[in-house]
Every structure is written in structure tokens, then in C-alpha cells.
Length: 155
Image 1 (tube, rainbow, N blue to C red):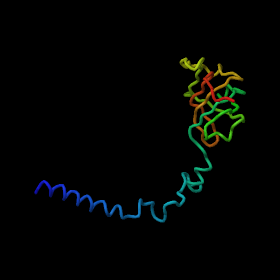
Image 2 (image 1 turned 30 degrees about the horizontal axis):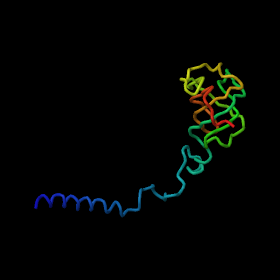
Image 3 (image 1 turned 180 degrees about the vertical axis):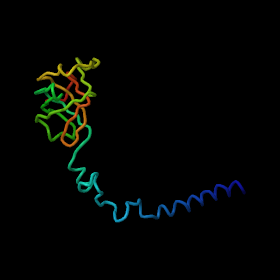
């Protein structure tokens, strides 16, 4: 009898603990804030919906042809031939991609070869490159630029 009453008591206790939580109105959003209503944006600039839509950001991926390089600013200008959803509006246009000290610059001879590190000076006008990086507030910052990658998706 004790073997049955112990688990039964536990099930009843858990049920009593869960029912009030399940009967609630969902998570608390704070005073005067309802689900689906705009949330305050960081730094007090409008609401979160507007803030998110006005500043696309995230990881970009693009393939293109180098049209210019600037050693002083560490930037590469690329005509975008293919890209992910984040930068699809830039197709067939020139974009300036900034590099940082942590940007990986690589050269890949063939699809099967191991990518070798290169210097910024080795990226030349006319090179086809693959670039991944961050896109924040309209600024492209490369985390990796690969020259000579197998770019099967080119037109």
C-alpha cells in the first residue's frame, strides 16, 4: 500500500503545482505591455520592431569579382555575383568590404587543396573571391576572404 500511496501523492502534488501555472495568462511582459506590442528599443530609438527592420545585420556570404583594393583602409571593393539572403539587394553592384586584423585571408588553388594564408597585397583586381563576415548597419566587415575558391555558382 505504501508503494502506491507515495507515487500517487507525488503525482497529485505535481498536478496541483502545475495547474495554477498553466491557468495563468502566459509570461509577464511588465506593467502596461501586452504580447505583440512594440518593445522599447536599445538606446531609446523607437520601438524594437522598427529597430530590427531598419538595421539588417548578421552573417553575410557573397561571391564576387574584386574591382579595387585599398591597402591604407584595408578595404576590398567587390562586384557581388552571388550572395545569401542578407545581401541579395546588392547583387550586381559594387560593395566595399572592410577587413580587420582578425580577418582570415586565404588562397585555395583547387577544390581539393588546403587553403593557404596570404597577405592583403596578394588580393588583386579581377580575382574571384568568396567572402564571409558581419553585416551591421550597412557596413560589410569580412571575417574570411578566400581567393581562388571553387566557385561553382558563378553565372
